[in-house]
Length: 371
Ligand SMILES: Nc1ncnc2c1ncn2[C@@H]1O[C@H](COP(=O)(O)OP(=O)(O)OP(=O)(O)O)[C@@H](O)[C@H]1O
Ligand SMILES: [Mg+2]
Image (cartoon, rainbow, N blue to C red; front, side, top):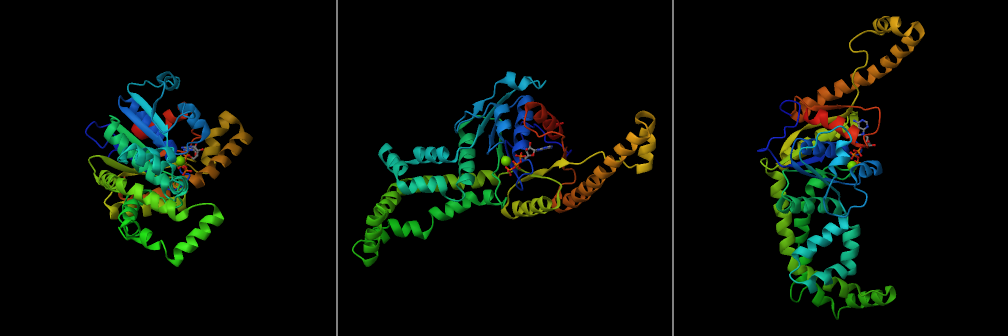
């Protein structure tokens, strides 16, 4: 981060992707960043994924579907915030995003309905691994091209591997361009050849036993999908390009200063570089600050004693000394990350006493992000 803050630069990137290890504050930072950018005058959308219930309530998000909703400015101004722009927020609903994608890409309404009603599609879309990542990128594409937003902030899902998200468009493209589908759809391809073969018998028996027409379902599914495949591939490619364009996208790596998340954040920075994804800066959340503040325990006791009395001063100083251990641990991890990630002035957000789940505390976090 050039000056340790994110700039609300009108010529700057308009997509911010908050990626990082699980549980470090990605959703919190996404919401706070969007709030801050909107307060500064932008028309901003934030796409959150599984926000904590209280945060969703604070933003008025609990009753929303898969489309961004304008947050009532009065709700935001209650926190003493001057709101000059607009904050739009949504939580990502995986299923409806995929359905909508199929809806826009299917050549006609019959094909569309065929795909949506298909048992395999239903299972696939609600259960397939990575569909959350996929929906996030599909939504991003749609908002970027159709939403008319100055900035879009994208939260990312808590995956064990923070990198899954980045590979979603590539994986989808590979799957759709893969041989399996081609073989199945080709005239005289797998579907045709299976009929009348012993395999088919197996399928039929299975179908009768299970009460489902597996082969029929599969064939119908891939047939109706065939017309949409090119569109979906194109979109996956489009998103891949969008995410690699430094004029449009900035990846913010969010982490906490603990050891494991810190190493994950470093690995993520390396992966971004390998993949040619534009790295915008490091955000270290939940940093312990202000322990003994460079004093010794005895000095702090002596400083506090006139105000608090000997006994209380000793207890407070002991507490601060415990805290100081965390402060120094955080300083060391952050120093290591600076070099390894290649951001000499990361944004540091203090570990707040309370959970960040209302507008007031989001405003506090936003102040650290945007100055
Ligand atoms: N600076 C902070 N000080 C205190 N609590 C915080 C801070 N930032 C976030 N939290 C709290 O930490 C918890 C986790 O935050 P959050 O949900 O944003 O993490 P996440 O990275 O999105 O998690 P997941 O990977 O599960 O999606 C929440 O309860 C949040 O209120
Ligand atoms: Mg989250």
